[in-house]
Structure formats: structure tokens, C-alpha cells
Length: 302
Image (tube, rainbow, N blue to C red; front, side, top):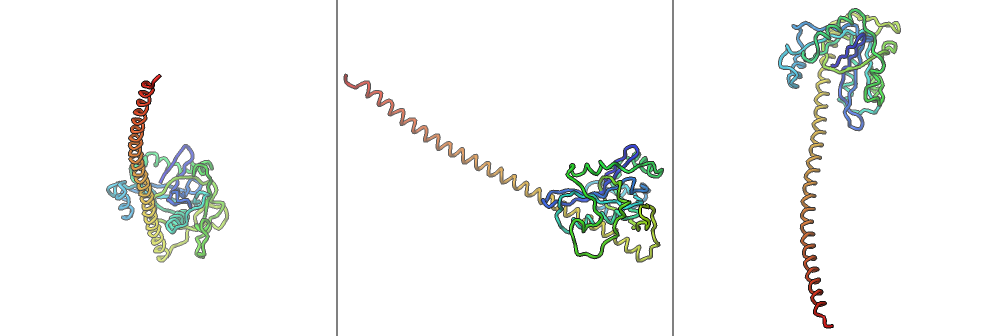
């Protein structure tokens, strides 16, 4: 996760790695700013992050214990758009799952993001929470979005099938266009304790109108969160595997190029030795002939 807080604006982006059709690695972003976020709260130090998140951070070397992880709870008041490049993305199950997980996250009422404690300044984060609570922040300028992908172009999507058409009939609710405008930018962690909500029926309103949840609904939501975490973990593993594969190819290519260069230099050196020997021999013969002719001319009778 990456937060930027400047004067009366802030923006945040939660991201996931995907690949373009050219196999180049890029990120897609769930964009959050004051137009979507109602509150941000830093959870109590006794709050326990899910074990799979702790294990992931420990394996990545980001922390060593549960105490090194900080949980941040987001409360949304509107759907958050997903920003992707205009270039075609490589169609693969892991990319589809990662994008779908971010889209579901953007439709949640509340969710948590877990980050290493030392990755954020506590005082600055506290100021942001206070500013949001006092409703003193404005949506980020559109330039924040335009700066993504080095200015090559962006598009916002509300469903994964907008990237890759599918025959799937089970589609989540569409965004209310009035709630999408005024978005912004930054990067993702693994969410948990997520609660979903429905958009208000009146167009343009941003009030949350959650319905009472039955036990089955709560179980389903919990399973959705766990599935989202698993999808994220699988996506990360596939992304790391792709990176390792590309690195291996690059290293192999470099090794082969170096080996070929060494062999080429040896061959050139060997041939130069042969050429040098031939030139020396020709030069010796030419010198002997020149000396003989010179002597013959001196002894020629007048």
C-alpha cells in the first residue's frame, strides 16, 4: 500500500501485478481518495492480523513477528474504480483473479490493509485519519491518474469482463457512474475483515445502506475474504515465478553471449597467429629473393 497526503488532498492505490500481451510486467490499481474513503482508522496494537498475512510478511523478510505488522481499516462511502493501462493485457487466470479481487475490494463497505509498522510514519498517518474524520479533504486532481503508465493512457473498469469478454453470467453489481468520478492513486496489501455493501438506490448519493446480514451471508463474506487472500497469494507466487523465469532467461542469454564472445576471440586470435606466421614466411622469402636479385645485378658484366 502507498499513501500520499498533501495539504487538503490524499490518494492511495492498492495494486496487483499483471502482464501486457507483450509479456511486460505492469500494475493495475484500485484508486482511493477522499471521494471514496469516508474514514481511515489505525487498528489497536492488540489487533491480530490473519496468520497467512503474517507468514507472507515473515517469508518476505518484512517483519519477524505479529507485533511488527500494522492494520489499517478503510471505510468506503462510494465504489472505487480500477485503473488499468489502455494496452492489451495478457489473458491468464492469475491476472483475471487478481483484477477481480481488487474490483470486489472496491465494492466493500470496510476492509483492512496490513503493512509493516516501519513502512509508514505514524504521525503523518494520524494526521490523515484526523483530516478524513473532519471532512477536510478534497478529491485528488485528475493529473494523479494521468501520470500513471508514463502518460501512455489509462482506462477505468467496473468488471473484469471489460478486459476479457467472457460467457460468465454471474456479474457483480455495476458501479454507479456518479460515484466513480474524482478518483486518485497508490499500492496494495492483503485485505481482511471485509464487509460488502450495496450502492444507494438514489443516483449520485454516497450514503451507505447496508442490509442486515444472516449467518449464511456472514459466512459467505468471510469465505469471500479468505478466497481473496488466497487469490492474492497465488497471484504473487505466479508473478514471482514469472520474474524468476525471465531472470533465468536473461542470465542464460548473457552467459551464452559471453561464452560465444570468448570463443570468437579465441578463434580470431588463433587465426591471427596463422596469418602472422604466413606473413612472416612470405616476407622472409621476398627478402631472400630481393637480396639474390640485387647480387645478380652487381655481378652483371658490363
